[in-house]
Image (cartoon, rainbow, N blue to C red):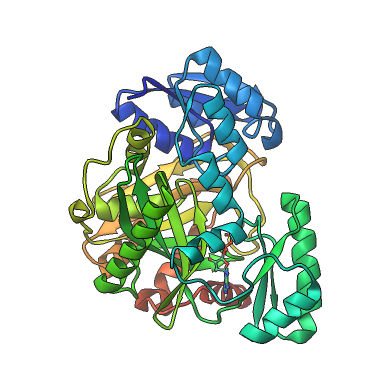
Length: 449
Ligand code: ADP
């Protein structure tokens, strides 16, 4: 096992990785920008190295500075967390070229799945069902029109290099296709430096259901069940659950068997998540994330597994040491993503946290880098805490989440805590009866009140 790991990230996920390392007797190196000198991940790590100014481009995305930090501290491996460099195939390659282990998949798999067109093509060949749409990149607007007529409106034009819900435009009918085509390409070029787009049928009532997988370097692949991430705003997840309120054990087993077979054929290694839209009992693959995800704790709670420790073991060359039959699912878990944003307008609300109190008690987990007196910098993602609860049943988990949200105090900045409290009371959420489009309407309704 590694003796020292560099964590190329910040915030709650840097802490999350640090905690796994500590419990395994691995020393940690934090990297940080000048805006994060007083950050919790820097305080808790065994060593820390300042890698640049506040702008992420000059610090958390600064590959030479991060590799130098690893070299001067003698780290043997780098964990990229999520976001930043986690899905950058060139970074993974450079880490390995410097004789370090990259805690994640191979650069080739990161590259393949980072191009959503290539990802869909690979999954199609492996027999995984897709959302109906174009088979590859759309070369012209005329081609977009033709495919849209074939799969029938509404359709979605999506960026091949997309992520974070960007570069995605709906065309409800033929009159909107030209605009959607133009905007998706322009947005994609600006955000990702690549204007390749493809087309999918825009599903009107799907749920977002994703499957967590873990693979070692010896062809062993297991899945840890599904997460339901249908509560989204602007295609971004706000609340996640494990398991999904709408899937049966048979559905999970069937999807799991299909996905693990596909990833075994692909020779995939380390953690990964396959995302699907589920509608009318059908799963349609949309993309694969080749990294640890924000919402991984709900899976950890129901499976009783530490996914970061699994990642470290696999990256160090250890076999999984268990099979699918050893994976058991217990109870239900829910995660609320609490962000430093105005709960009504979603305007960012950075600043000094004058008072922070985290909830506790049985089945409650808070992954957060907050503390009283901490100043949330304006430069990065607004996620400040993940509140996760686990209970025997979904109704009990909802009751526990309500109780925990009421106990939690964050003063000095605005947070989305009030929105989460409202969601937990909403009859549609309680009934488990909603699609990916529900939350947006619910939020609009709250504003109108
Ligand atoms: P990103 O990588 O930007 O997150 P995804 O392809 O994962 O993009 O899609 C993000 C979200 O957008 C999905 O969870 C879903 O809510 C919505 N979405 C994506 N594709 C479709 C589709 N074909 N029909 C309806 N909604 C979709």
